[in-house]
Image (cartoon, rainbow, N blue to C red; front, side):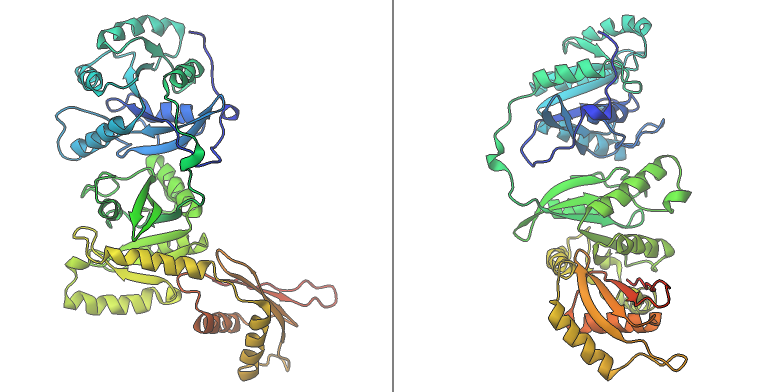
Length: 463
């Protein structure tokens, strides 16, 4: 097999929602599965670190090779007779194998076939699906001599590759395409894709538990150890008669610039997931005080301009005393986002999770709300007549015109004869919400003052 290295230009992100073949990448821990996934999809998206067990859930990525689209599913390390969290990770890998069209068994060629690899091979024999044995970490021709020993797994010819350097990856992709089934045509394609919802929050607030509760099955690994989820996990879920695309994200401990290693890349993935979503459901642990971390997560969603729902999870652990203090914490810590939708739920027991869909719909409606320009200017004229801007240095700036420049989130522009006090801009935003709603959505407010004597006008952004 000749050496070759695929490049991102060989790949393209699928532009349609046509059904695509599914390829599950499985193997024991630390054989390079996530590195291989990144090589197959042509971009660094799966979190990679020299520590076994970084990937815990089954994560799906879109890929394309030679004009053929397919889905690659990265899985956690598979081990027989695993216990505790390792057993949950293994169950996710087995679920990926059960739903895949083609399975790639990744083996460390430098180590050879271990007892775990042989146990995996026995499972795959029973699966009766196309299997490709990938002999990873073959960085040069000298290491290819060790590959032939992997014929002993009984799964056919092993294919030597170097996921890290790209050696042999093009040939492997060609083999993969040859084993893929022909998928149905685009008749099953959704005319409008499902709305995207990001589940975010600090570690161990119950994001994965909520996703499993909504899906009514174990889609992701749940563990009492904080930080179990590293990669964002996409799941299509039927909720309240509508299909939603929920994304379970890694818990945010630190600012991205302060994080390192796996946590750094997980933070980037979470930030990208929030920006790609339409609405962010921020989970707070209602049994604990609202923390600085909680505030930071909320700020991330607001700064991204996403619709917002605050879900107070673990409500089953809240007693009367805690409710008393929580009400005061909300008044104090969340006073700048009184417009956000709020629901009290328990991901563990399923309490009130049915309230999430209506809250998300309300937030999305506010996020996409538009006020006609004529109605908006009648409103601002009446508002300023009732409460004009304070006089400064003998003058008071006037609002000449107001328009809504966009939606998702709603964006407003005030054209004025001079700079407005920030407090007055906040007053206008507050009254705008009182009279028009925009429930569950941030608002962007910009002030453009009329230029005088060559001086540029001022701008006052507001959320």
